[in-house]
Image 1 (cartoon, rainbow, N blue to C red):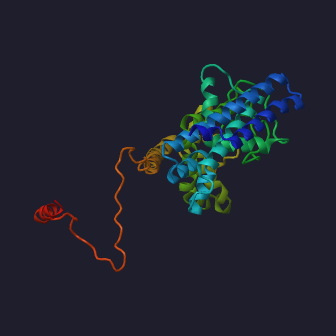
Image 2 (image 1 turned 180 degrees about the horizontal axis):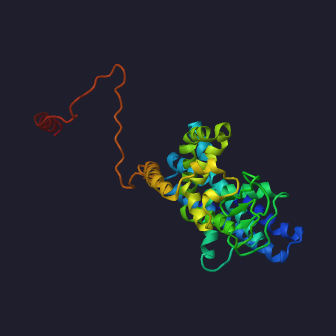
Image 3 (image 1 turned 30 degrees about the vertical axis):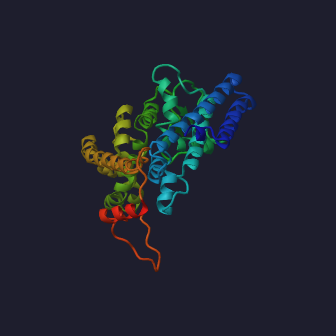
Length: 358
């Protein structure tokens, strides 16, 4: 298990990302560019190795079973699990591929975080980095894609040591009105600086991902899947054709428990958000109704998660080392007679044979 963590090809990729993390601040002429480059290189190497170690331990604890690979592919990277579920065979959820993906995500996340010096190395900041490259890998995989998409487009904020990235502009799901988009430790399309209530809203999502890991990502997606059809129907009933968008936006987004929590931190009623009209308000549930639906939803999600983990990890233990080898019974060859009794001579015959030999 240790050897594969330090696989030469995986290490070369991590070192390449670390080298880029060191060079980019120097080329871009960033403030304190040398120190940024050093921090980026160190976090890239440590992040890549931590991510590979974490995934390797998870898979190794289940003896690299196909079920464990599928569970890890779903829980921490989503896309590999989705693809292999439909493929019916391990393509992207083999140990080698999963460790490669983990190394890339961990190294890239570390390099970008060091380059922009986001981590505050005191208090909760000490937990932010190790969580981002292990338990919170699912969100940060998409967060790394946001970094790549926002290159040359997004405007990264100047603040440092806030334990999160902020792009004042960049990728978002809505622009009129403007909605921020947060994945992992990356907050994109967010104009508001630290201290603003909207910034606190998005920062809540960052820590939700760190605290709940795969459950945060999967239940957020699961909530949308469960409610999208009823939301389409409700939207059309309330707003007509325009409800085809408004219904899912209200039921799958505003009514999502994770968003209800973040809006409570922001201190703004969900019905008072820009772009929400009187008809939309009819589809946005009060917080007590969101909680009422969330309790059975999360109970079912937790039950399914336990079931999946138990199915993937149970029965994957290797046979005991001192277990006796199983005896194989071979079929008799054609034309040979079989003997159904042990080939031991009766006592009388044995005695007679012994006398003759004497």
